[in-house]
Length: 91
Image 1 (spheres, rainbow, N blue to C red):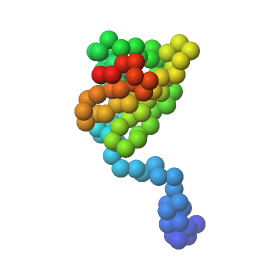
Image 2 (cartoon, rainbow, N blue to C red):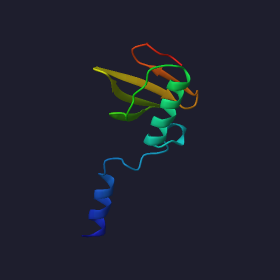
Image 3 (tube, rainbow, N blue to C red):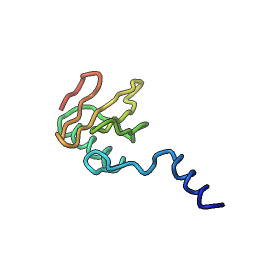
Image 4 (cartoon, helix red, strand yellow):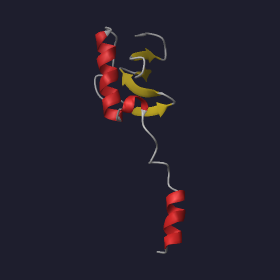
């Protein structure tokens, strides 16, 4: 493979080399911190892991099921807050 091919492959990568994440946290750390905040505020949180963890702007968006319902939490590490998208529990 030539050097030119390597440059093209690198330029077409899927963006895994993204910049820092909100709060400098990994997905696992964001999930654990979110659970801690939810529990500290006597709110219902997922018993297991999250089915989806994404970075959206300066926040983490985490999705999990509780019973038959899917819930979405938005964790803002700068503010130290978690908001549930359906408004059941706001911390």
